[in-house]
Amino acid sequence: MFGDIMHLIKYVLINLFITLLLLIVLELFFGHWISGPNYGFMNIPREISRKFDVSNLYLNGGEIKYSRDKHGLRGPYRSLSNIDILTLGGSTTNQLYIDDSSTWQAHMRQLFAKAGTSKVIVNASVDGQSTKGHIAVFEKWFPNIPKLKAKHILVYAGINDTNIESHKRFDEMESSNLFVKTRNWLANKSAIYNLFRTIRGFFRAHQAKLIHGSGPPFKNRTWVKYILSSAVVDVPSLKKRLEGFESRLKNLIFKIKSFGAKPIFVTQPTAEFRVKSKWIWVTRDSGGKINPKSFLRIKAFNQVTMNVCREAGAICIDLASMIEFQDEDFYDRIHSTPAGTKKIGLFLFEKLKDKL
Image (cartoon, rainbow, N blue to C red; front, top):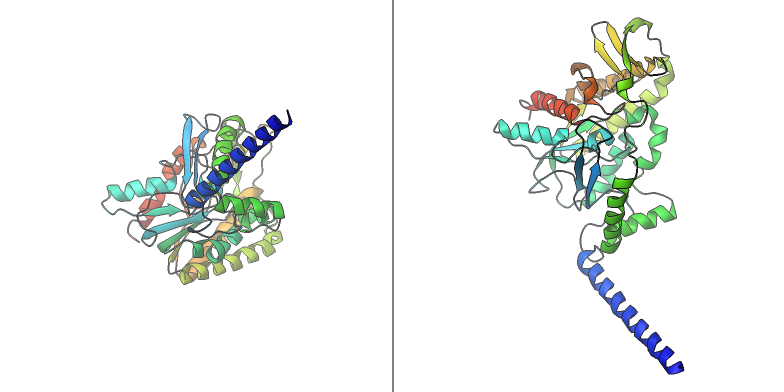
């Protein structure tokens, strides 16, 4: 009896040893322990290929594919040293719930190719990032991407800076939390851990509710004409935030130029208002509330973007005030549907086709 137990224990230990040895071989072969990019503890979303069912977000949503490569970049390229436009921004640039083929960057690529002037346009945005995070990528992320070069860097920013305090955890390229640091370290090194994350992400994508699209649906809102002069907001209260935003934009321009690229800045719209002549049209939600203050807040940030951009002699595109969106162009307050991304892509192509 005792001999049988010892034999069983020996059998289990041998199999555990073989399994462990196999896992080590797999890690050394497929992981990044010996070679590959050294991203350490950074929380860069990399090596992702996921499918999401976005039927509850927008019309004809269905299943979409979201992918990022081993460097955390989204979009096709042949050489890291020959990128025409590298885009920076938060979730409105990342477009997590838009298919790889339908982002506004993808539409720009298609339009340039159709015009006979193909451009390599790659997405390096991160959900939740403000200009603080955009500055950090030049210090901690991009230096770890071998031979990365871009002729232009397009920054689509502003909205996340209006409430920058809530975006701190997204802007920190390295967390101070030991658990998060360990998780990021494994994600950047371990092939097995990333396989686990991929499988877990697949089930979560099909079971969990999407965080985008929260808030009252736009189909329940009505539009109200509002005299611009009567939309009173205490803009001076934003003075410190606007000054901080201006300082970060100037720092970001310095980083971009030091990187060897030319900056392009694009202002951001929201789905809550539209501008026509001296009027603004503001959404009234199902509770009957009208909030024109958000219009003047984002307008103030967009104006700072344009002022700093022009002062630096960069390419400045005031998309927020030059393009007219419709209800079907957004699935929530700030995120675009495929119809919206197509409109953005076309607009940016038209503005940039003779400047690149």
